[in-house]
Amino acid sequence: MCAFAGFYNPFQDYQKDEPRYETILEKMCEVQKHRGPDNSGVWLFEQGGLCHARLSIIDLTTGDQPMKKADAGYTFGITYNGEIYNTNELRLDLEKKGHTFSTTSDTEVILTGYMEYGPDFVKQLNGIFAFAIADPVRKRLCLFRDRSGVKPLFYTIRGDEIVFSSELKGLFAYPGITPILDKKGLNEIFSIGPARTSGCGVFKGISELFPGHMLLCSKDGFRLQCYWKLESKIHEDSYEETIEKTSFLVQDSIRRQMVSDVPICTLLSGGVDSSLVSAVCAAELKKQGKQLTTFSFDFVNNDKYFKASAFQPSRDRPFVEQMVKFLDSDHHFLECDNVTQADRLYDSVRAHDLPAMGDIDSSLLHFCSLVKQHNKVTLTGECADEIFGGYPWFHKEECFKASAFPWTMDLKPRKMLLKDDFLDYLGMDEYVQEAYQKSLAETPILLEDNPVEARRREIAFLNLRWFMQTLLNRMDRSSMYSGLEARVPFADHRIIEYVWNVPWDMKTRDGVVKNLLRQAGKGLLPDEILFRKKSPYPKTYDTNYEALLVSRVRDMAAENSSPVMEFLDKEKLEAFLISPSDYGKPWYGQLMAGPQMLAYILQINYWLETYHISIE
Image (cartoon, rainbow, N blue to C red; front, top):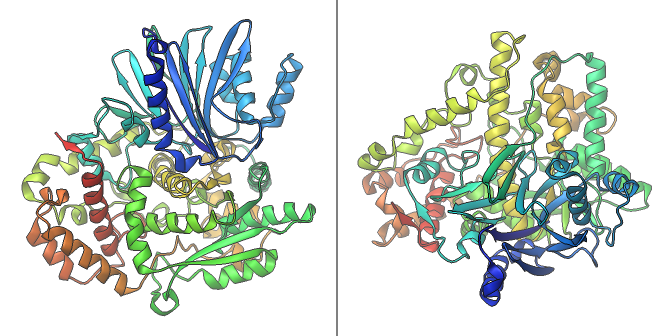
């Protein structure tokens, strides 16, 4: 895992001002150094430049980037962030076609594959990735992003020039690109956030490459091309065959994602998803005479303050302890206190270059920084709920019938603190509804679906397009802020493609949520873990944390220069600060209730202030 950036203009010769543009590349790289602290490099060529900050995971000695490779007098170049899990198969195929390799890195395999097959080689990749390839033969630059959108890639087009970067901050290191927020961007923050419309970079003129897409840049212009999308088709496997194939795909994905030249670990919550990942990893390492290292997260004094709810029915600790004993893992119980969680809100903004999921994000960022003290690579259980239907809104009738994003059913909590004239300007309801309807229209339909199954498919697509993307962004930024590579085996496109077309009755046989995944994990886990009721990522229930946030928001509101106060109504805010918190009705997802609204406000204010954002 790494970071990269660059620029390209087929009508310009950057080498005429080589010192200036190499310095720019170095700055674009430096601001993303947290993602790749081990090494860095730049390459300036006539029509553009590439830079790279490296986190060394595969081929520790010869895998530096940007990587160049010559063929017939032409020099191709690549800068890349990610991991390819079928590298060995791809390399063997290319060797049969006469290609030779000077490294063992997946980077060289991608570049060589492109040189052999062209852009369509991306369809052969199994992995998480974003990369840029400079092609001197066809005189173009090509940008690619993985199917699930695990790895980020932002860009802006200015006339004939494109500037791109793994993170937004890389773009702002390029002269003339400044953070500007218009009405659309404001709606992304206040109406949609912490989610983000697919392809939207929030700031004016900035986009993010769509998952499963490539962008081809040449003298003919900029051509966005989809190379992968979900297809709806009739599922023909029996229930028993479906369980068998799901089990194979899940285990194969986990084993493939264990590839590393440095030790791996797993994040273990004691739920079915992370426990399955950990069980497969532990078994594979045991064959090698090695012990798996695992980590779990909680908050100081949560044993005292925890309150069970429909969203969070139980604490993780007892289930983690059971799994640690079952796996015989080298386990580390990590905790976060109130002050650290509040202080890390600002690190979270710097990691995203945007307001994020409040303390749900800041705590994960802190935990990842602790994991990085032991390991560089971790595997997680992210994405299983979106793919297998684990969230409450897959099952609740009101979510099923509503014409709204099921994780944000009611916009009233978002509106309650905003000034009336700002609300009129935003047109929040219209913006959200337009985004919702657009996504519904893009859902791959199956004519054979009855109305109920068709609606289930819509909800599943909304989760893949929106909610899963938010959590993938959170995992990538929170981990990479400390140079920790987090892998997500459930986001393997083969699993997504297959389970997408499995009928709901098979996914939830006998009325058991995610029963297909549970049945696929039979024999790998104790039944108490395999059939544990879902409990999401932990959050603190200590009321002292809320009191700390209230104090910080009051101090912020008292400052005349606090930029977020341009949008907030002081009287509404004060009423909110003295009212009891509602932990039972989140305004986003399952966890973001009253305290998280305060945290989000603090993040927005810090973001506007620190990034010197201009408002149009």
